[in-house]
Length: 287
View 1 (cartoon, one colour):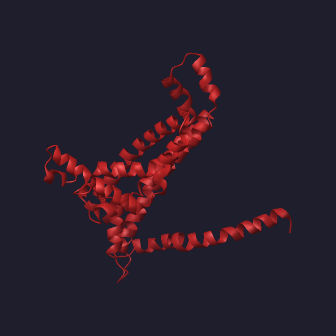
View 2 (spheres, helix red, strand yellow):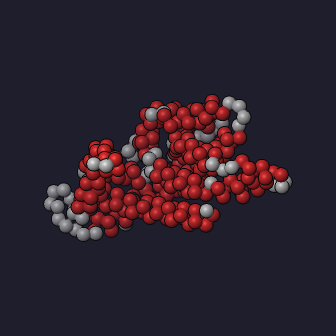
View 3 (cartoon, rainbow, N blue to C red):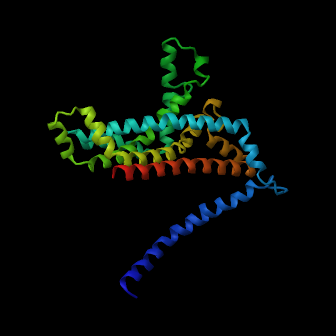
């Protein structure tokens, strides 16, 4: 056995446990769940075709959850990317204390979700610090309980939890840009804003699209904190797709949860595919 075949052989041996785990716990259940989406319930198991999909797409609660999720993604993802780019740029240009600031910015990555939820419960809970301050300034307690602020709370929680990873990606991308480009434009008298537009943004386009893709995926992972803070049935203003899926699963309504999951996966897949295609076009255009 030559060295190339031996390396390939051992590579498959090391990959096999992970591949088996992915097949058993992800691929096979995902494929089998399509069967649940085509039957009426777990009792009679009558074939109903696409009825579950049609019913899900016309369900008011599912549509409201979809709208809330879309609003959350549309607000949190661009804001998170902008703040991460700003902090990464500032971190790159720092002369002193860079290591200490970097550790502080990356700290949320290692904080457990339970600790995160407890911290934000102290800040944004019914009797939390935010409500107490608002009441001190004359706000009505019953108005605060109507949850008109909760979407903003969720955006803040998402940003605090996920912005660190975006900083790492942007920081890595910034370090690949040669300093000679900036120095040449400084010599030519170009101001900082135009240097940012014509050098930083142009060379960060591939990184930006990767960050966009990852941010969209991470925005669907904020459910743990929402669940810990507001429970399984929060205000209708922050009732997300994850709530709908989780509650249908707990009710053992496998037909509805499977059809809703496939609809969400298809929609998310189309969005991610669009981001991927945009990344390829931008990369081909500028590089």
